[in-house]
Amino acid sequence: MSFKSEDKPLTVAATKALMPVLLSHKWRNDPALLMAVNKGWIFPGKIVEDQMIVMSAGSLKANTNPNRTEDYDDYSDAKFISASFTGPKPCNGSYTYDISIGGDAIKNKKGALRVVVYERKQNRLYYFYIPRRAYRDYKWIDIPFKLNGDPKVANHWWAYEIDSFKDLARIKKEDWINVR
View 1 (tube, helix red, strand yellow):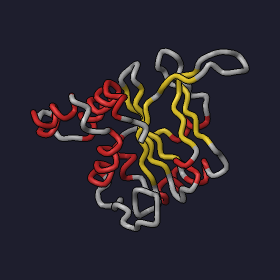
View 2 (tube, helix red, strand yellow; view 1 turned 90 degrees about the horizontal axis):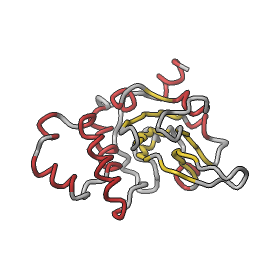
View 3 (cartoon, one colour; view 1 turned 30 degrees about the horizontal axis):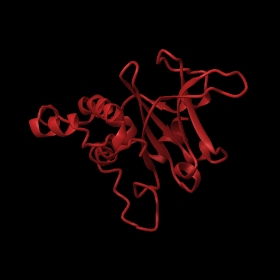
């Protein structure tokens, strides 16, 4: 996960943004849960992984094979990442505001990536279903934002954006092939 204990303000903000999307009204207002969120004890990536199974209507099941690195038995993997500043770039000295997934996070994956992006400037969530065929030849997936937090939709990864978390959880490989 991209969240560490030293990123407590970001962890708290991201978890608070996820709660209305993922949890029922009863759980969103539970005092013990709110205390745990405010203390930074709950990591958003774990909530995303667990709730993806709950909201999938039975199409996703947890991977129980210890030899595989994917989160679900259909070989797909859940990712929760926050947009952040990177740079300055050596070529032009400018900063970028984006999310990056790469290295071991995609290197040995065999299935789709179910990505939830938290954009902190506008406190928004974005959802992406990226099939294996789309990132197979890439070492990094960079999804850029403008410096004010608006999406830079000219980037080709924005073609894989999904409307809601529920759709992200329920989409199957076969559905994506038929739609795209």
